[in-house]
Amino acid sequence: MSTIPPVIAIDGPAASGKSTVGKLVAETLGFLLFDTGALYRAVTLTALRRGIPIEDEACISDLARTIHIDLIPSQEKDGRPYTVLVDGEDLTWAIRSEPVDAHVSAVSAYPGVREALKHQQRRIAWQGKVVMAGRDIGTVVFPEAPLKVYLDATPEVRARRRCEELRARGEEADFDEILAGVRRRDAIDSTRAMAPLRIADDAVVINTDDMTVDEVVDAIVQLARERFDDPA
Ligand code: CDP
Ligand code: CDP
Image (cartoon, rainbow, N blue to C red; front, top):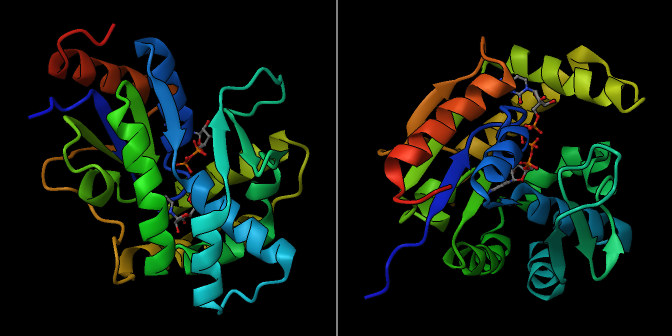
């Protein structure tokens, strides 16, 4: 029997802080951050660029099985938590664009897409010392994870965070539109048949509405130090 590797699963809805907090937790503990949303975004962007209709489930599932996505630590100083390469091309910012936001939940509801990406995620998790962020890490992708965290915040707080983030990057942001998009994605992600967004029975829920990033990071690092023998 193999021992379960040190993995921290961080799930939660859009803009609850998974990647920002996850990156800092990973840095503190000497772990790697693996943000699984980037995989679904990369498949969606590639489908849009190749003109594959989002309704074409078979074709999009094939695409998920064949494209090569790498998440690698970044040297760039433009605020990116990591670099995303799709078939070798740097698409780190392109996967965060509005058309991808609008279609990614439809793409990620396809069982063929989820199955293809699940294999890649489990392979990474088994390498250990990883903070894996997503929607279904603690419930489906790696239910063995010794520490599961569910980050939450109201849709309004999350939409405000997303607006501030876009404006900080010099992009335009309309609060009402972003709030509607966040709610729409929450609804699709939580009601899809396969691997819906839900809190794992053994997850620690952190409501981040009134917490700073550093406070959330400290809480998770504390849990990791209690849970793992030598998390650094
Ligand atoms: O950053 P944000 O929370 O807005 O989104 P993300 O984590 O990049 O995820 C984008 C979309 O991918 C989500 O809305 C989900 O539809 C899908 N996703 C998923 O289904 N399962 C995951 N483990 C991660 C993301
Ligand atoms: O990955 P996910 O979509 O869950 O969230 P994110 O991309 O990390 O974005 C969250 C945004 O909210 C970032 O701009 C953070 O600086 C900010 N924030 C946070 O993550 N946690 C808090 N407690 C407060 C603010």
